[in-house]
Amino acid sequence: MESILGILFHSIGGFSSGSFYMPFKKVKGWAWESYWLVGGFFSWLIVPPIAAYLTIPNFTEIISVASPSIKALAFSMGLIWGIGGLTYGLGVRYLGMSLGNSIVLGFCSAFGALVPSIYYNFYPSEGKISFTDMLATSGGKLVLLGVLVCLIGIAISGKAGMLKEKDFAVGHEDKDREFSLVKGLIIAVISGILSSFFNFGIEVGKPLAEAAVVSGCNPLFQNNVTYIVVLWGGLTTNFIWCMYLNFKNKTFGDYTNKATPIRKNIMFSALAGTMWFLQFFFYGMGESKLGNGASSWILHMATIILTANFWGFYLKEWSGVSNKTFNTFLVGIGLIMLSIVLVGIGNSL
Image (cartoon, rainbow, N blue to C red; front, top):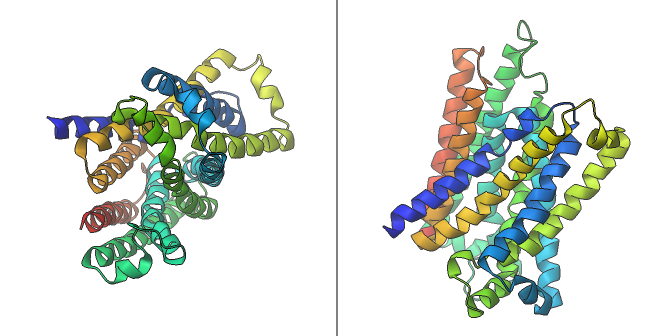
């Protein structure tokens, strides 16, 4: 029963993450930076404290008495991760739901497996696996194989993007007018690498979660207090960039432009932001039930990729492409999914 609940929670979280960009497509008349910022306020500032209040009533006290160095580190990891979150939205914008999510999450999986081990090679910590340790164990070698497979899958997905761009060059001018392979790939690489820093934020913020458990919080929700500090960092990065774009593009007027459906735009942006945060809420619940971080990661990432590709097909992002293009895309997705399984199994050995 516990495993069933764990799978259910992860499926809900993965579906929420893979679907959060869909409400943004209902926003009318606003620039990207405007609706992204409104959604971000709900993702990073409004919903996390509500979730914490409902599950950890004394979360404000836990944060206030925590070590300043712990809060500063968690916030810093959030700042770096925030760039990844920001570029994630741009990656999906330029590559589409299916290709964008697959490439970004593929890179996130690969670097999420490599970056921590490389860090611990330079700064050894008891109980942590370094890159050298990975090379010396079968599990570590399997993780590295998974990373290699992932990169091959990403390369093939990129090839599918090139073929798609070629297919749409003539006779399909009405399809995916924002599609840009070069911009999208560059942004996706940056996003995938930097998005892995969220895990560092959770790691350095562990004392906050442990304090929540000591205070009587259900371990199921312990990370909800850590999310608040990490997401403050994400909010800072995204707020500065979106304000810059509002100034540069002269789009400050979006928020008060009565020629646009302001209430509906805010509502859809709020829904997108809330759905985005729910991935973390349910991920923590699912992992606590499964009791296996590797299995949780596999299930979570796989569900997000599958959900994003479902929406990509629903939006007909691949409608009108040649069979060669579509089959190339499927091969790339298959390899990325296989890499996630290999990394997960390797981490569990």
